[in-house]
Image (cartoon, rainbow over all chains, first blue to last red; front, side):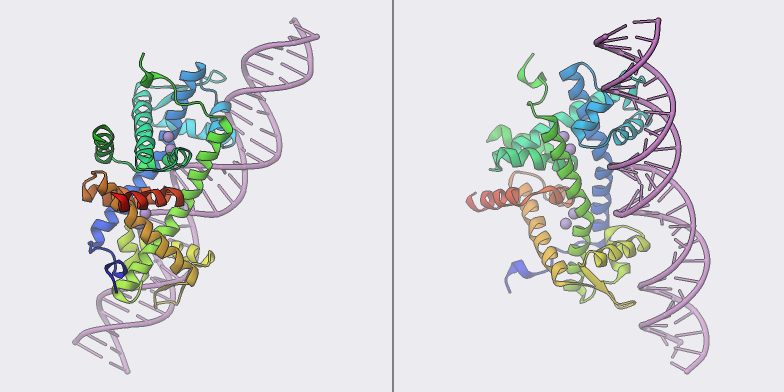
Length: 146
Length: 146
DNA sequence: TTCGTAATATAGCCAAGGCTTCATATTCTA
DNA sequence: TAGAATATGAAGCCTTGGCTATATTACGAA
Ligand SMILES: [Mn+2]
Ligand SMILES: [Mn+2]
Ligand SMILES: [Mn+2]
Ligand SMILES: [Mn+2]
């Protein structure tokens, strides 16, 4: 029996539970993050972010996008005027910028360790939301030093 | 205005929607994956996987774990005998093994690029589920060559 | 300036994954 | 072997994030 067949490293139930809990928290932020990033991008590209465009690019039905925007407003990340598109608050803008930088860094890191670009772009869309500040710093350092 | 202030790389709405859709699919598998891995670990460590232990280690209430186990059974990944614990089917075992290898590889990769071990372990719990076969292959190659 | 079309909003459905509370079954110890 | 403690199960609630179907609103072309 090699070391690879042994059970995983010892870890207390509490600690492990904490890791899962943190992963769940990150997940609950993921959709918000994707939407603010998307809204920011649409505004940068087209000068406005319409619900229909958001929905199309997110790959969901438009009422789904509408509900997501409602949540963004509830959380103080966005505003919207009926039939006039969606706008980011300062808080939303700040989040969008941070998320965008993180997204790029994750893609760059993946490519740097040998992941094909297309795969990197696809996987990053999910991975990014679980990359903590510390891990991001490590990625940046790695990309700089390399 | 530097290149960093420009909008993200051009990508068709359809392609981008596909990426988000794939990320959502991965997410819907994440919980199943964590549970089969956990059940496999508990069996390896203690000879059995009781709902109470699963719940404690996942950081959820026991009815939540019970419902998750019900879903595993529905998907043909596990079986259970009342008051006798939970067992993995062949399919469940295969998934658990694959998930465990992937988990370790992700942790190793993160550490290899400079992420502190504790952070790596924590972030990997979420990241792993979005690492595709291709990306995993790249990680393995990187770890070997390094 | 009207009116048809396209965009947006609203309502109501579903499944997943959390939770608490309460009932029941098993196990273990005295 | 009876009874207490523990484990499991069942019921019912909430939020999120999907969906479809059906109003409404706004805009631009005629
Ligand atoms: Mn994303
Ligand atoms: Mn992203
Ligand atoms: Mn995990
Ligand atoms: Mn894991």
